[in-house]
Image 1: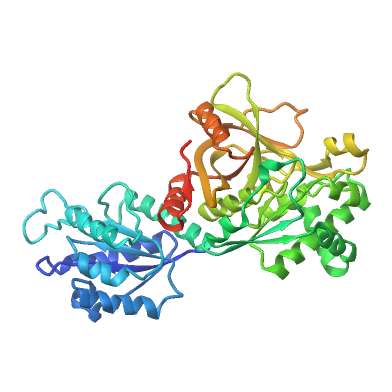
Image 2 (image 1 turned 180 degrees about the vertical axis):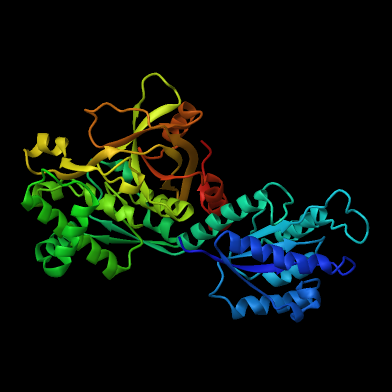
Length: 464
């Protein structure tokens, strides 16, 4: 996991003791380093005490940010004391990255004039002025937190996720490979609505994938075959089918590299099965496992949240169906798909099998490629999106994969999910016109995603 770089900003009011600034510069930098990140900071002698307490000093800090524009992913605005809001807005109004506003707590026994901070109050002034200027910023609970505290550690963890999501989503390219599956009007989307949010969709006919598949060979094919055979269990898959799956994998990799794609959505049936005699599920699984968001059934509007989910969690994401109830438990359901789930989210290595639906529809031997297995127990974050009325809108939530058993005859890769208040959520998803797919990753990242989507990226959020 690659760490981020944060620009550190320290606010000051002149009549507060300078020792508070000196200790803050050290303590915040130490907290950032302990979390696995790096920091840059205005040199201490650039301003009085190395902090900003006027508009003029704010301009110095703004120049510092311009000089280092490509080096930082977010700004941590630290208030060791009340701070100066005019200097803060001068310094940060053009920084164009997420800003975390952090304020020091006062301590009982240290409330005399020499040691009292008043950052609790000063944080409101900074937030108010930022609001007046329309400058987006982040403020997590609790209102004040010492940099050495576990509370600030959690704030920094969430803010890091916010910065990763914003960086990933401001400019992204999704490859839509094939036309929308004819029977699935549910996955229709508006390219222009996505483009307004910086998400470009490049469209490709399946004929290009087929042409590249036919010409795949040499070292690339050998390497892809070895990679797939080491990735999951191919025992029982006919040799010719393994070769065809590997060729399609080479073709997809080449398209991703050539067109600079950050995610793909693939028309995965019925032409691939009828023309090539395989199912591409395991290829989507492997792409997801190495960080390339890959949605099936040409669901561009779930490839997009998968990108964000993976950025937030620093784990793989996958596209699943809201598929089955789990007995009579109103808060449990089975999330499933045929086989695109990444191995890193599974209990163990999957096994590549023939897709029974295609074997039934088109005859045996045309659907080899589903990576079947079970999803591991873990906290989960889910998200999905739609385009409607020229806007991009998401919903978000959290729950957990329980590890509850799913009977042996249940085809594909699934997991039992427990989500508090599931029934009204399902109703809201349906009434809101969202699709039957949902993007999922491990971990609890809904708060960070909500902050990134609503504060910095301007996505609509539906409450479910």
